[in-house]
Length: 77
Image (cartoon, rainbow, N blue to C red; front, side, top):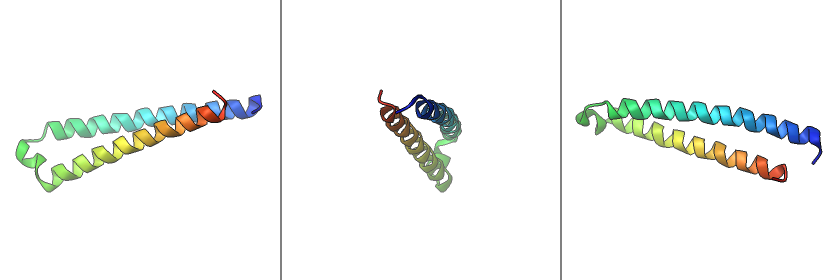
């Protein structure tokens, strides 16, 4: 792979790392919101919705991390 394409991949990786950080921050906010709910509300539909959101954000974060790995491999590293 030539230098120009490796640099383009580096730019993509940097963008994805920023996205990953944003996803992590949102996940942490949701987790804090859930943790601060009374136990009765945690077991309610609202609590279940928040836990689903947290799970989905964790999956998104993992997918971005996996994508970064593929891009790094594509560069030959």
